[in-house]
Image 1: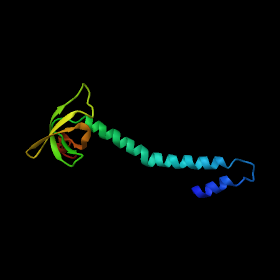
Image 2 (image 1 turned 120 degrees about the vertical axis):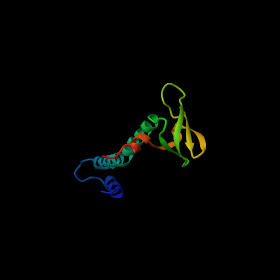
Image 3 (image 1 turned 30 degrees about the horizontal axis):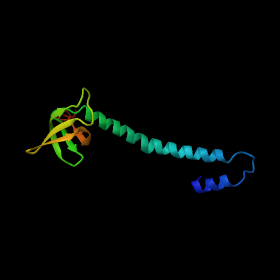
Image 4 (image 1 turned 180 degrees about the horizontal axis):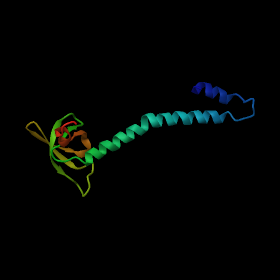
Amino acid sequence: MTAPIALLAFAQPSSGGGSALLPLLLEFAAIFAIFYFIMIRPQQKQKREHEQRLREMRKGDEVVTAGGVVGEVIHIKTAGESASMEDRITIKSGEARLVVERGRIARVASRTAEASPAA
């Protein structure tokens, strides 16, 4: 049942004496559930995994910043005891050294994962 047809069914009095509101509510709940499981939940999971990779970042990892700069982590300066998105990360790209915030790193590729042979 599409939304315009459901609205027409809601506007007309039902012949069976039952409520026409219940099917409409069930349809909206089903649409919301589909959006949640197809779009919202996977995005939340991907965001959590990315933040976990940023927290586990260490010296020697290859990173790509949000601006597209590719470099290697050479120093991590934390603001407190735990890793936060405002920590300063020094990366080396070519002959240049850049300081970026941890939250501005778009991708982390660990050197240890790349160096291990695929079995």
